[in-house]
Length: 78
Image 1 (cartoon, rainbow, N blue to C red):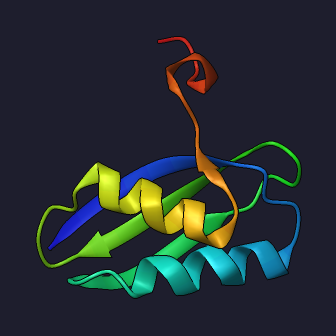
Image 2 (image 1 turned 90 degrees about the vertical axis):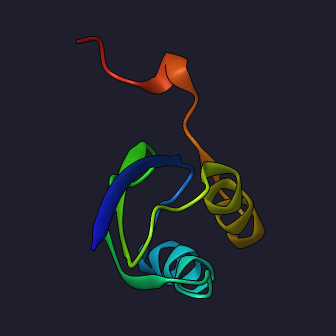
């Protein structure tokens, strides 16, 4: 089992959470999606899958839902 966390921008409500969850669960191998919503900020999206996921496929699914993966400048400083 693989678990990956992505940062997604633009989500503001539970409808946003449902849209992103729906698109990500449609990807082959995805078994679960959990989202820590930060309304209007950058939310953490954790995806469980049976095999590693292609980041481009994840980005495309998030885009299809109407949102975007956060770019490197949106990541916290180490």
